[in-house]
Image (cartoon, rainbow, N blue to C red; front, side):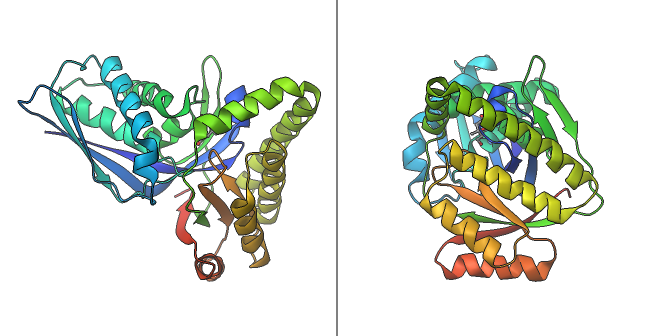
Length: 307
Ligand code: MEV
């Protein structure tokens, strides 16, 4: 029996822009997906998905999940092995929190253990990247990188990708609010690409701005200037609105978090549903923002970055 884990994640800056080589900041969160791989005698691969999940998520992602698993098995040269794979863990499978990447990493690690493949972390990440293609089409690699390595990361897609670990002086409290809407990241990424092609000048301006915001955010994060950091998150959300990946529920929760005292708030992940994230240092503020979100009937997750 082989076992593996992958972290959930929160993108703090530049989802979507990261697909085009603009730097991003991402953090793993303290929730994981687990995978157990067992050899069996029936001549097929069985995937038993026991993860807790947002309503409709598993049904909606079934096709993507299958394609993803086939890609992983092919990449690891295990497509002809009868395996039973069981997914579990405490990460609630939903859009925007890195559920697909966490599962890809967990499966890659579990297969690696079962077959004593002795893959490096880099190779596990490469397998997970292949698996992510089943969900995202052409992923940037930011999600699987966070799900593999954990921690707080500066990530820039390129040849090769740039991954820099960021160390901050004290972990920071955040609240993640779930709209409950299962979103299609593949579609969101495709929409951005089409609009970028249609309005090149406008999009170039927005993308330049996104690059400035993330550079500024990195300085604010490293100098622990939380007011500035929060403002950068707000600016990032406006840019994400401009490229049309936010929606009414996300904007509502972002606004609610800000009005309740969060230093900044933005959508996180692919958008069009899924999660938003609010910067809430200190347990009192974190509790207050989480309660405001819950009171409106949405799920709120309290967690930390930079642990
Ligand atoms: C999804 O979590 C993040 C996106 O930027 C897609 C990607 O980077 O692959 C929307």
